[in-house]
Image (tube, rainbow, N blue to C red; front, side, top):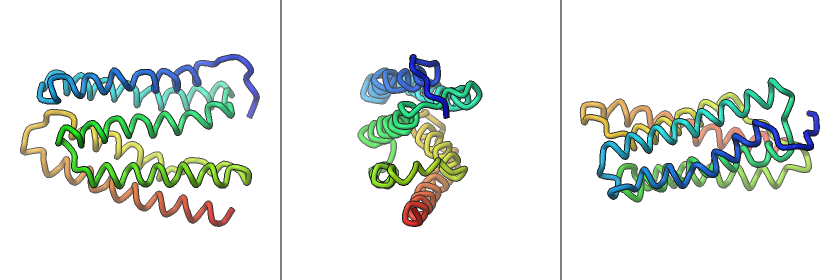
Amino acid sequence: MRKVDRPNLPNSLTIFRILALPFCAYALFKNNGTDDNWRIIAFTLFFIVGLSDVLDGKLARDRNQITEFGKLLDPIADKAMLATATIGASYLGMLSWWVTAVFLTREVAVTILRFAVIKKGVIPASKGGKIKSFFQSFGVGFYILPLPSYLDIPRALFMAVAIYLTISTGVDYFRKALKK
C-alpha cells in the first residue's frame, strides 16, 4: 500500500456515497413512501451509490491508491447506506424490522470487532462478505421497488439468502478475529 497525500478519486467516491444518502432517503420518504415513481427514483439512487462502492474499490486497487483513510471510511459508507435503506424501508412498512435488526446488528458487531483487532491487522472483506453485501443491497432494493405481488415469493427467497449470508459471514468474521 502506497501513501497518497492528496485527495484521490476512490476516496472522493466514498465521500460521495455518504453525501448522497440524504438524497436517497428523501426519495424513499417522498409522499410517505407511497409514490411508485419516487420509490423507483429511490431504488435508482441507492443503486448508483452502490455502483460507486464497486467503482471506488476497483479504482483504488488498479491505481494503487489504497489509503488508510479509504480502508476506514469505505466500510462506514457501506454500513451507512445499508442503515439508510433498511431503516427507511422498515419505517415505511416495506421491510420487517427484524430483518433490519439482523443486518444492522451484524454490521455493528463486525465494525466493533474490526476496531478491537485493528492493531493486529485488518481482516479484509472476504468473498462471502462481498456476496453478502450484494444480496443485502438488492434484497432491500427489491422491497423498496414497487414490484407486482407475483414477485413476493422470489423477493422473499432472495432476502432469505441475504439473511443467511449476513449471519454466516458474521460468524466467519468472528472466527477469523479470534484467531488473530
